[in-house]
Amino acid sequence: MAGSGQKILLVDGDLRRGYLHRYFDGERGEGLADLITAAATASTVDAARYIRDTGISGLDFLATGTLPANPSELLLHESFQQQLEKLASDYDFIIIDSPPVLAVTDAAIIGRNAATTLFVVKANFHTLRELEQSHKQLNQAGIEVKGIVFNDVEINSGRYAYGGKYVYQYSYET
Image 1 (cartoon, rainbow, N blue to C red):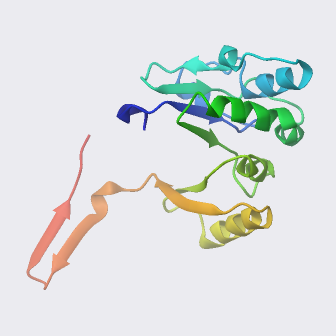
Image 2: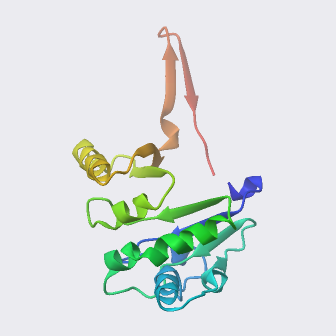
Image 3: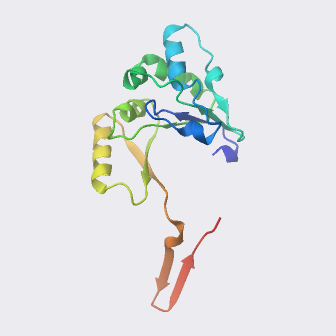
């Protein structure tokens, strides 16, 4: 999306075990938790102070920041929603990575503040029961799941046969 000229903010919303910072500068540093805390205690906060340039044109990053003792309570604070609303005016899309749905309530809290919720599902990893339970839990929280993103899909499996005579196989190499 950033490559197509849109301005994107990627937020690591996993305030328990977030790790997205490892893909950028490697430092957790100040981030979302610190922004929410500062906004809860001050009348004005400069969110840009917590946002990092990724080196990818159009893509900014907001790390988890200091891992709080009370992640759910922090995400429930009104300053979380207020800061997201302020940031929305600066970005075309804000993508928030949350912890797993079944592990803690944080995903549902984040989902209530999101315009669209998507499941990210690892191929051949999650059971149908886990997916059903996750969907049910989000629905009970009033969150409608709009789609699924499959990741870690093996791309060599595109093999098609027609009439037993012709076989087409697609493979991609990097």
